Length: 246
Image 1: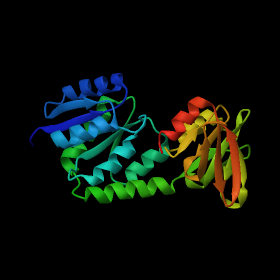
Image 2: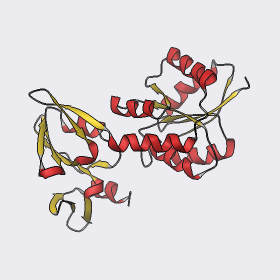
Image 3: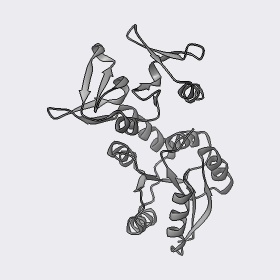
């Protein structure tokens, strides 16, 4: 088999260098470049037309999922291998969509198996179909949250906002204005939720799909769900983070 041409995309320099060093020991893998953002990666992917893109998921501004979605607009079909520290729900979504993945910190044996699978089982499934399957699965994904009595499964798209309650978190849902209390702190929940959620302060995470209004002057934002309004104070720094996506 000819040399496998690869690109590494990760916002953390150390992660890029570690993976590049591991791949250097594979005589049939050539690392074409290492990019620190999704936007830079798009340019390099179009320029080099790599066989594989080793892609981090959790990057600022645009995630790995955002990059994959953008690739639908171009006539380029690299194999995407996610390199992720994400929770189990994202890995299950990736597996469902027939992508491969590596979990950080990357183990050389796992990398070897990944490259071997690529050589032996490279899929000829249409790239766009993979992307749409992945995004559809993510949009429907349920998360498991521990409670005082056991656990609950919640569809992430039904979450309007989450509010801290000491060491617990209240999850406010769109259906019937329901509130569920889980024994998970808000910081951990913020890490579990996908990119359409944003932390707007120490005690609140919102689902941007319900966002209707942001006021810089009053430092407030408003969510609307089922004709009910929720208004939150929001520090200046978080306002900047919120509006840059719109």
